[in-house]
Image 1 (cartoon, helix red, strand yellow):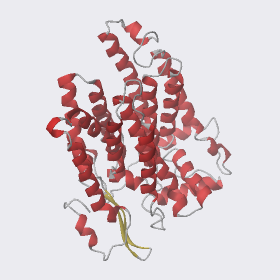
Image 2 (image 1 turned 90 degrees about the vertical axis):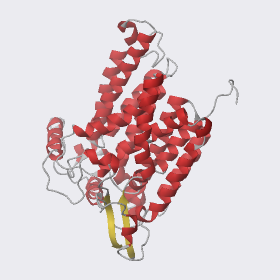
Image 3 (image 1 turned 120 degrees about the vertical axis):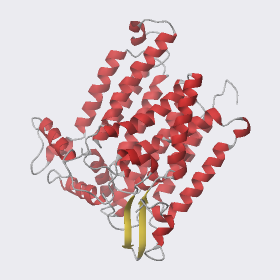
Length: 429
């Protein structure tokens, strides 16, 4: 490979995307019954298809619209309920690949991160269930990738890529409000990177915030870009409610739109009774209280779906976050800080979100972002006598994925007590 022919990520991305889609789709229709929160969201999607009135008002409409789309194409069955989630998970895998490619410009680094996502059990499970979190994650991850795509764009293309990222983040919020902080993070990142680069180049704050002669987001003035980020994301979010204006009962009106947002907030912040699988946010990185999405006789056998993370990735990822912070303090690498801070910010926000109950699956998006420091640490430290540690790590992650596969894919088990084989700790149900 020469300087005249830079590495091309498209072939690797296409292969990874195909493998991801095949993995997520294999035996997708099993079980042939609603699983866990599918009972809420598939029911809401059915109401949307009938356009009869509001349902499941604690969340915006887009995720339920996508589930309904799958049902319109493939029918009101287990394939229709879940097929769109597989596409969302594949988009997550490719989005992480794109983020790492834009940051490091190395196909190997991007591939390692994408494989970590592929083998992360949380992603596999959310790819195969009709819930909202998978769609939110897809829009957040691809939105970040689009904003990074804009970061080194030719000046004539920066604006359109920036607006694409804003639109994708608006779609993420249109799925779940938990995506709102990422719009703020995008704004903070733009201002911070510009100011740091301006200081390094001994430029004034005014020059750093204006479009001329910029290393990052060239041709993009900061104040108009922040305004556009807010306006586009809010406009796209608002458009996801369009079907609600055509309900046969209690249709939404322009005058009611803001009031409806207040009703959603009240629904999301209501005090709920205790739940068997509830857990608090400080416990999620250590997987102290995972969740059974399913464990019962169904389709002629006892089957289980255990919402747990791949221990190598979730626990190893915490070490990788520390390693990236160490590399930043030692070398001043902004890329290493960025991948560590993305996980930290995605996790820390749960300390502020006003939820009366928490569940391990709320950690889903943060568990995805652990692939970034894992790949970055590989890029920085897998050298010399440690040159093949990343390959050994992926082998370990694959073996753990295969070990848990029977109880994450609803395979038939021989007897009702088989689940004990995979329960590592007393807090695992």
